[in-house]
Image 1 (cartoon, rainbow, N blue to C red):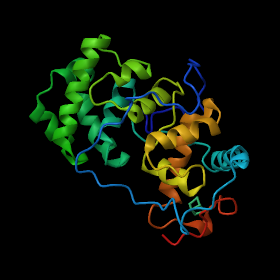
Image 2: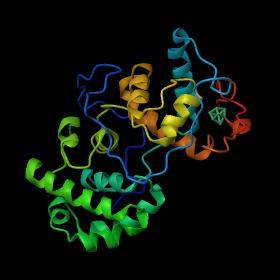
Image 3: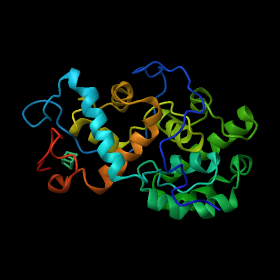
Length: 268
Ligand code: SF4
């Protein structure tokens, strides 16, 4: 039975230290583009309305304090997608593009009942799968991607979702962000930082980077935080983005970071 928000609840151990260089993301690990998806609200990174710059020498201490406070505020931060296996998390993460975790969690029980593993999903009828995932949006493309991904898992990995960035990224429709979610939460491997719309927005608002491209944001965050906190870091930023640092109406007055956030008192 899937656990609610199935992932580990504490900072993850490093099962496999790996050897990714700090700040470097391998070329070609781009996330899949959802055609027609709305862009995230633009955060000014230049001019008067851009967050105050934090001196490079002060960034590590600033980052450590941000992490300390967010970890104290959200000790139970975790992936809010429901899953009981790497396969289920991979499917749920693909469905979560441009969709809320809550909606995905309402969709996946029926999908997992009908297609309990990659072999079953690889044989799925596209129209039947589209019907099941319709409410998550972009359902034709998602159904197509899910079947292609499952066929790849069967053909390349004997039906088991692989536990490496390289192998995950070789699967149809799986980009670096999706692979990071699966590695960090289903396998306890901190290979990178998941940069979704919340992480990207908060990284800029908190003065951690002025980059807006997700891969550049990830490359900026990785050297600022210990590797064994990368998965939890994204949970903390996502939780804070969802609960306090809203895209349109950040609640700076009640934010635990307001005295150290260079964007405190944002109007929008
Ligand atoms: S102080 Fe405002 S802008 Fe800064 S993190 Fe908190 S809610 Fe977001």
